[in-house]
Each structure stands twice: as C-alpha cells, then as structure tokens.
Image 1 (cartoon, rainbow, N blue to C red):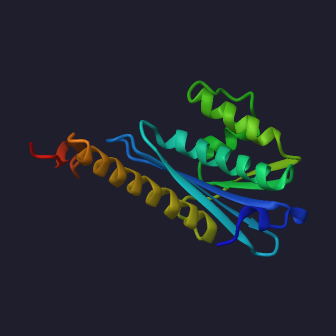
Image 2: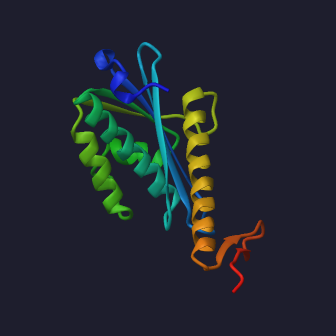
Image 3: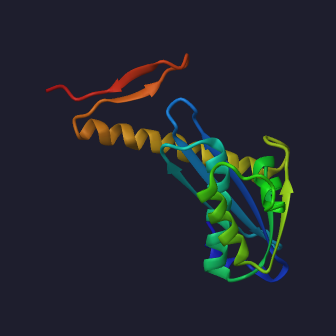
Length: 177
C-alpha cells in the first residue's frame, strides 16, 4: 500500500470518505481513501464507540483532511462523500449545525488547512469504486472494533452484550468464575 506522503499533490488529491455506525450498540467505523492524479492510493480507517453515523461521516472527513495536511501540506482537495449532511454542511458553514458541534469544528479546522476544497456528493453504494472501498473499510473497522472490545471484556472478566438481529441484547461473551 502507498503511504500518503508518496502521493503527488501537484494536481490535487481526491478524498473519498465514509462512516458506518450501528444504532443498537453505538459502534462506529470511519474510513478515507486518498487518490492522486496518477492513480496512487493511500487509505486509513478506524473504530470509535458511543457514536452515530453522522458523527462517523464527519470524523472520516476530518481524519482524511488532517492526514493529507500533515503528510503533504496545504493542497487542493476534492472531497467525495455519500453523506449530504457532510457535503451541504461543509459547503455552507452558515447552515444550521445544531448537533455534532465538536465534529463540525474538527472538519472546519482540518479544511481550513488546505488551499482549496470542493465538496462533492456521490450516491451511496454507487458505481464509484473508491466510495465503495471507503464504505467497505469503514464497515470492516466498525466490526473489528466490536470484536476487539468483546475480547477485551472477556479477558477482563466482564460480560459484553451485542445486539441480536432483532435488536435485543444477547450475551455473547462472559468469563466463568
């Protein structure tokens, strides 16, 4: 995999972002995929607990923009997101942002570090290869994070409850005394 610092920012960077969250257990995943004009690709993803889908969508953008700024400095960025919440709120900062204020502040701060940003909406689960890759990475990060938390709970002698298919909580791991 290419390191972000190896991308060529001369003609700008395309940043595809996505967030994933489970409304039952509040687990979330985020991901970004950065692509330069020469087809080099870098990507990252992560897990967060106690979150919502919109928060993960915002977190993915902030993480991607921050990482690009750190590795490449101030560059032109095209941000592709399947979240209209992110795209519309980022295009117009005067738009009513009543929730997730800390996440919005992080997006704004990361965006301010770049010379130019264009916000583009792509249809979720569309034919965009890189949007699909970001979606896959965010979902995978969320699922892996839940698994890690369950294993840690088991190691520490605690019970971890995860939602079943019908939304009720079922015991999945416990340590016998």
